Length: 150
Image (cartoon, rainbow, N blue to C red; front, top):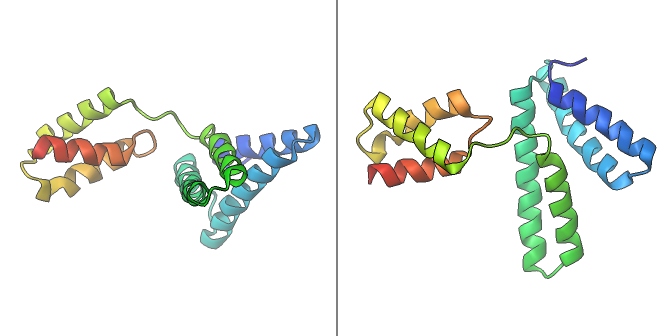
């Protein structure tokens, strides 16, 4: 067993999909596992859940970029494939905090750090990322910080 419950779950689901004959989903998970295994091999470590989440998010971002390109090129069948892969991989990520909770966290951190201008935005972003990085949408955090400080 690895240090990451998420990676273990992906591995067992990949095998399950293969046994069921679900080649598409099995292939998607195998692709994700190859990224995870490469990272472990390169860094000579066992990934924890936080590191696995970071890698999955980068894979999903690549899928999103491909999806956008396929949509712009009117290649609906390829766009649908990318969307399905994103959906499958998103199932392994923790649920993100909603907008209300995100805004509450941003307000609290701005008050705690006594941030007065957008120039000091990095301090707030850093603290929020350290404390809530896996479960919060950082683009939403950025939006709220800018809104509250402008």
